[in-house]
Image 1 (tube, one colour):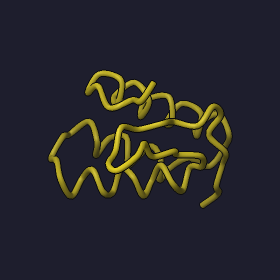
Image 2 (cartoon, one colour):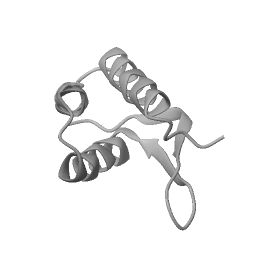
Image 3 (cartoon, one colour):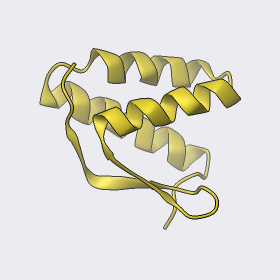
Image 4 (cartoon, one colour):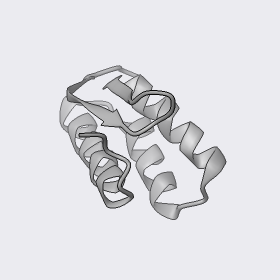
Length: 78
């Protein structure tokens, strides 16, 4: 698996302070944590896309999907 930078980084509401996701590997780890807490089929789909990213275009699309889901769940920090 390749690791790609996330530009701009995704800033997630988290405690005690916001969490910054700066790479594809960090996004994978974050989704793994979310899957332990929530059973959303959308998360499993995004996890599969993040794991399957072999090219930059795949990574960009997978990160975009994660960003959209976090925005819908109101988990993006300003």
